[in-house]
Amino acid sequence: MQEVINWFQSFLSNSVDAFLEYDRQDKYISINPVAASWMSLEPDEALNKTNEELLELYPNNPALINIVSQIEHCLQQVFRTGEKRLAIHEVTAADGGVKIYETAYTPVVDGESGKMRVFAVGRDITRHYRWQQQKTQELRRSNHLLWLNAANSPLAMVGWDEDFRIIQWSKRAEQIFGWTTEEMMGKHFGDLGLVGEEDREKIGAIEAELAAGNSTTSIHRYYTKNGDAIWCRWFNSIIGSGDTFTVLSLVEDITDRKRLEAEKSQAARLTAMVAGVGIALTKHPQDILLPCCEAMVQNIDIAAAQIWTLNVHKNILEVQATAGNYSKNEVFESFIHSKIGEIAARKQPYIDCGFAEGWREKYGEGGAGENTANVPQDPSNSVGTVGDLFQR
Image (cartoon, rainbow, N blue to C red; front, side, top):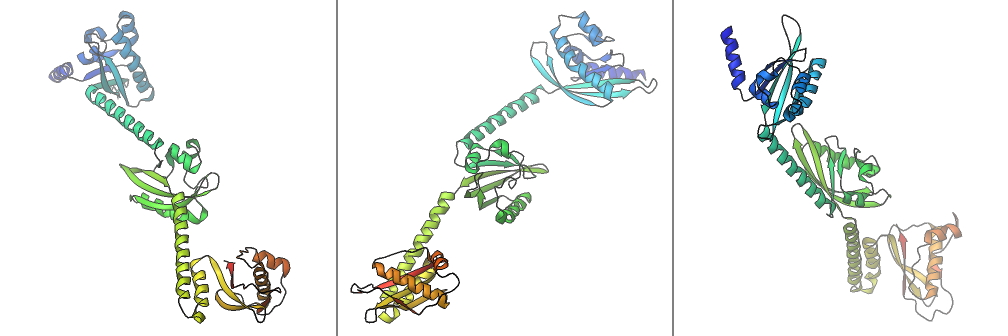
C-alpha cells in the first residue's frame, strides 16, 4: 500500500499538470509543484493552509493574489452544489508571462468520514488557447469585412437559423424591404406582411427544400413595409454545423428589370400586331379587315376589335369586321353605334376609355339600336375607317 502511495506522490510531483486537493475546512491537503507555482510558492508553503491564510502570509505576492481570486469562487461553488466545475485560469508564470490552464474541479466524498473534498486538475492549454484566440479574431475580422462588404453591396444579405427565423439583416435589406434590423430579428419572413397570401405556398416549398439541405435560387414577388410590390431574386446557401444548419441568402432587387422586361414584351406584341396588319394589307381588299382585327386582339390587351367604314351614299357607318369577345346584346350594340357616330364626327383619331362609364350613365340596363350608326351631315370629308377597342 505504501508503495502505491509513494508512486502516486512521485507521479504528482513530476506531472506537467497541476494537482491540488482542498478539504471542507478550506485547506490545501495536497498540492503538487505545478499547482504551487501558480501561487509562486513551494508545495510545503501552501500545504494545510487556507487561501485566506496564504494571503495574510504573502500579501505582496501578485501571482498568489491573482490565482486565489480565480480558484476560490470555483472551490466554493463545487462545495455548495456538489457538482463538477470546469474553468479557465490565467496564471502568472515565473518569467512574468501569462499561461492559460483549463482546470476541472471534481467533488469527492470520503468513504470513512462522509465529508466532501474537492480535487482539481489543471492542464496547460496556452498554445491551443492562443491559437484559438487568434482564429477567433481572424473569424471576427472576416465577419466584419463580410458585413462591411454587404453594407456597400447592391445585394442584401439575410441570415436564418434552422427554424427560419431571421438572425442577420443587412443595411441593404433595410433599404429594399423597408423594415429595420431591430424589426426583423427573430421574425419569420411572413410575420410582417413581406409575403402575400397568394405566394405563401411557394415560399413554403422553398423552405422545405432548404430544410432538406438543398441550396436554391428563386424569383418571387414581395411587399415592402409601405405596401409596394417588388420582385427579388434570392440566392440561398446552406451552412451546416453538426446536426443544425443556418441559411445565408443574397437578395437582388430586380423590380426595374421586371418592369423593363414587361415593357419589352409589350413592345414585341405591338410589333407583332403591326406586322400582322401589314401582312393583312398585302392581301386582296376583301381579306384585309378581318386579319387586322384579329391582329389587334392577339397582340394588345383588348377583348374585341371592330372596323367600321363610311357608306357615303347612305351617310352611315357600317361594321365590316369583328374579332374577339364582342357582345351581341342589342342594347349594348346600340350604345356602340352611338359612340362610333360621335367618334366619326370628330374626323380625327380618338381614344375613348370611358365606354363602360358612358354605358351605365346613358343606358343603364335598357336601350335598343340598329346595326348602323348615323353620321352628322356634311360627310364631304372621308372618315376612312374607325376601330373601337374594348378593354378586357
